Image (cartoon, rainbow, N blue to C red; front, side, top):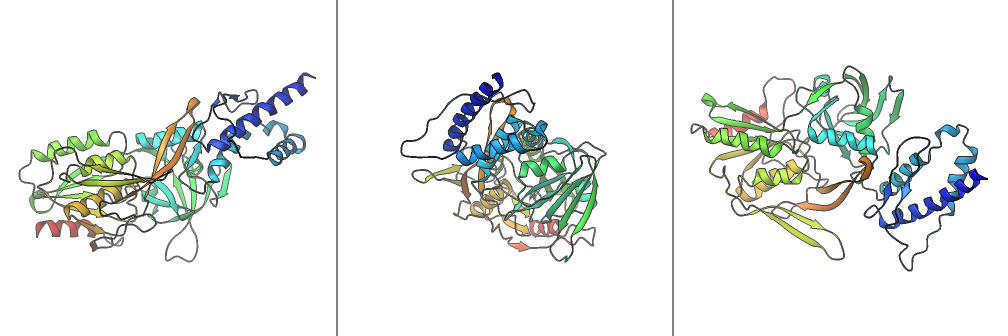
Length: 412
């Protein structure tokens, strides 16, 4: 009797929950206290009611729910909290945007570790080419780079024997893929990839290690070290501080005649980081244009509002197909506003902006809220930025041909 009452109460609460979540499309929801245990069950705060004039039939939802409860052979795996997570994930995935994702606590924790720049893993940034999971860029000196992974490789399968995990990547979300590839240092993950120019898949057994990724690296190159090579590896929470330190050091060196700003294999990060760096070059001009879709199109122009400390330096930007998102914002702004040349290969082409929302109990929601354009109104999504000087890096040589071209341009 008590069990039946609980079942009825549970279904009533779940019905209210699903309706409020589905109709708000992830923007306003009041899920509280969900944990991945057999005893716990989501508490619900009603934050939205059914909009007038909309009729929804949830009979199929309950038919599937009841069938799972009654027919699935292993009752221990029927955990209500996990079923609710799955329902929310499915709702968000139905939008059809691989960058709009719901993140349960463990997946959200992994994403936060990425932005902080210290974690155990193989050291690759991943994204999507179309709907196929792909390597955006291997991190410098990482296990992935040492093993031979390259920007643009398509990841078609992931295997981890210790985790007893093996699956093809068709339909996988970005957080699911990151969680599968991530693991304790010393353990091995196998990635099966398709590479342009190769007819057969390639397998890479990669031993995970601790990955500590700084935002900025500086070295001095060219004749007598008179050119600053500033490598921007990511746009994270600490990027501004590291950038300011590098610029302060640079301004104390009067012998410097030019800068190579290197965003190769930089998959992006915070938009504000790209705007901050661009503002040190762009004098009173647009850095990026943001377009949001709502009842009416909303346009926001980000303009430099501070003194551009590096505007008098000659500069070149290095790009490749691992340069994405915030990297493309920076490169596009410098070319459009300062006629700074881009050297290397065409960039990845990610022209949308995601807003990370930290919800209760460690849950996250990343939702695409806008698209961005370069100051000249170019949308790079799926297209990328073409270099002014196309130079391929020959993997058969130890020389960095793209960097050498940049140095040549600055010295001439």
